[in-house]
Image: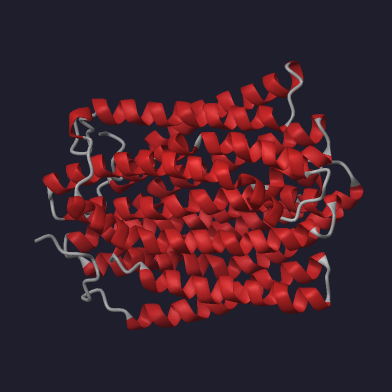
Amino acid sequence: MRNNIDMINGSLGDKIIRYTIPLAATGILQQTFNAADLAVIGQFAGKTSMAAVGGNAPVIGLLVNLFVGISLGSNVVIAKSIGQRNSEQISKTVHTSVILALLSGVFFSILGELAAPNVVRLLDVPGDVYPLALRYLRIYLVGMPVILLYNFEAAIFRSFGNTKTPLAALVVSGVLNVTLNLFFVLYLHMDVEGVAAATVLSNLVSSVILFVVLVKTPSVIQINPKKLRIHNDVLKEILYIGVPAGVQGMIFSFANIIIQSAINSLGTTVMAASSAAYNLEIFAYYIMNAFGQTCTTFVGQNYGAGKNGRCRKTAKLCLLQSAVCTVTVSGLTLLFSRQLLSIFNTDPDVIATGRIRMKYIFIAYLFSLVQEALSGYLRGFGVSFIPAACAVVGICGVRLTWIFTVFRHSPSFAVIMQVYPISLGITTAVIMVVTLLVKPSQRYIVQKK
């Protein structure tokens, strides 16, 4: 495929950028379309509906992050197999990944529908927000199979050095998402159910597009519908690497649910402000997260090819480039924060509160960009449990302790936000030490018999 990048040979710096830009753009576009949900609801339905959509973000993130992490296992296994030139293992991983995505999506869709009322109550949303939040979550959960399928399909393309095709599929579905948002809310006068339905339908389109491309591609990642089944040896390897990353994302999201509950306890204005700020600051996050994923894939292929020197060089370049891009985007977003926040809601209190959140979050990102790059480096070797454990203890542990102690004593929005730079600073220090101790020659990846 012409969009594939040769990660094993030649220069690295330019290839890292070429790989990362579409990957970051994919995350940013996904968030832009999510922000479109909030913007449409905020402008045409009011801040109560806006709070209902934004308040569900941690719950949705919990489910999606679990399987985005597991899909990372598919990415690493395929990338390593490409480095080893093992076509049979690549094919088995591709077909196993597709079935894993669909079955997991159906299971969690059913489980989520049954648990939805209790989950929304856990968020401690105000009484006027609860019915809207529940309605949005129920509709969103219907789309879990296609949402997970897109993420696994995207991981397959990225492991082969192709980040442009998932981006192209997302552009098509994203335009559809925005169009349907406006149609459902403005013309059909729907509320949160309209933006939820638009999200599900657009994800269906993107997953179908990638599936068709994978069926028709002549490369080793081609899908043959007749070969779609679970290969136990491959599943074991995917889960060995992906489950720790997925559990990390899930626990991370659980900690965010607790934080969101604390935010919700401060009222609708704070909820709306936090949701709006989140949808702006997340752009910088997707940039550094993209560099982390890039590091994982490049290291995975070169590790499979036995080129450990290129693995170390990849980590250094990803860290440097991530720092430059993340700091630049964060600075510009903060500089124009008033104007950007007003896109979602023009209430002066919402804007002022949103800026408080953004200031603390962008300080935290200085630590997070290092943590993302080094975690990606370790996962490229198949070392998934260690960065996951560091994040669970350093980020989630600190944040939960903070909410149940410091916030209870001083219940303010600024106090909640202070935990972000503190928890990420601690975690980054720990993972830097761990990275120095772990040697590439230590083969944590399950070896093929």
